Length: 268
Image (tube, rainbow, N blue to C red; front, side, top):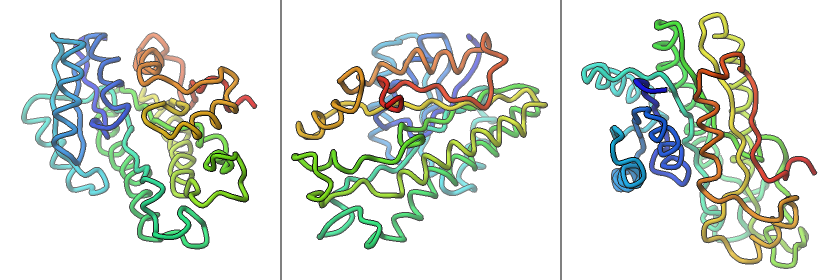
């Protein structure tokens, strides 16, 4: 896996650095892109702390704007950096209490502007990245695209978990529909690109992770855990091996597929 380069969108987010560590530990060069410089600096530091001899590049980029990605591609070419692996990891997952001052996340009062922003990042941005860097992979007759979905790429959210009594009739802060739309849409992109570029030796698969525990409310952790056969949330580093597998050339006959790592949640 050495002498290859992976580009990770949303590189400064929760899982971006974890994907970077997973691949850097295999000798892969890393390119992180994000909209926030401070997040990129932190992510690069985390990767280098665990993989001190790795190469990590960072670039500010808004993937919802195609012209920005075209500029980035030119910058990378000038530096003789060529992308072999693309991880479409970027997504908007707004805090539920920021949707409005009243009941939040409801379909009835859902903000169209916010929906468009989520789609522009999670779907349109993933398409732009795939189009621009996937086309370069086609020219080299080979490459790998990994889309990062969610257990909500498979199932609708159980809104009951968002109240301490686990009662949907008492919920005021709903998981909004925008996240489901983007994550289901990413599944469609995966299958389309896998079949479209199969003849060009560019493979596209999807990782479907479950919920990652960070600093969520205790009642939410408890309610969700009851719905997971393993009775717990994921640790941030528990997806590293899956990323390594999807980025490996040893699984060269796999494309258009999903790797689900969710503690069994989508099994129920």
